[in-house]
Length: 390
Image (cartoon, rainbow, N blue to C red; front, side, top):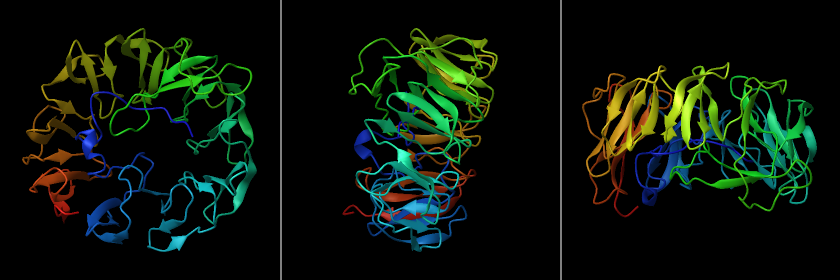
């Protein structure tokens, strides 16, 4: 699967890469509202009320990948089995590869040399195996009713029947969100994953092949790709193409012209000129941007509403944003820029389904101490402690 996404001056958990995995956050907003906890070196899950749903008996693994999707948690390394939200092991079908479920379906390989198809939650193929594996092809999860499929360097989109509803004609493409996707029509060219979840914000270069033949061997040479926006008929919705583009959020999309980012509306008109070095998409009416070595939150007219005088900052989520410095701790601010939760935390994440994962303090290092989940008032919903020897 190729996914394109987020990027720049923050980590989704506000901590350095050396602490990769301390705080759980789902790699996608598609995840179910179940939250991971750790006890005695084992992982479990709670619901948004703090009730333990899955006792802490699971291997810890990576904090960036363990999450429930469509009521199922993958227990293997892309091959299953799964755990349902009642703690029962299911789908132990011996797949060679199976991805997380989305819209009730998961891409799966029955054997090493087979082709990709899609299975339902009973483990039965409902879209028969027919799509080749990398490097001859790429498949993706369903989003907004369709999934991107690439075969021999040409990408199109299938529906739940497995039929191509947008013919294979692009050299790269993103999932559909709210009826729109970003695609590259011509190659070879190179692009960056501006919206792929990466807790350490590594910007990886990718190559899109030419319009004929198989995929280039991964080299990221050549000119930058030009991105366009399409609807679910494959029709362009914005005439212009851009060196970089994020998806539309709250009616605006961040796009890159030359070295600078701005924001366009659905008609392709710049409502905020390209003057920023780095941007995040709009959320809660504000976008986190960086300009001339400064950063802050702008509104939809481009006016700076909240200057950010912090080392790190997160975009707003559910009305609050985490900001701070690793040596001083992190706070949550509201949309006026005021501290909304009195307490300061050693580590903090964005809010997800009403809860944020934090390290409250204590311990001899960032790896141990008191951790837990708080609600938007700062109330602890669940607390656990990680000893220094774990």
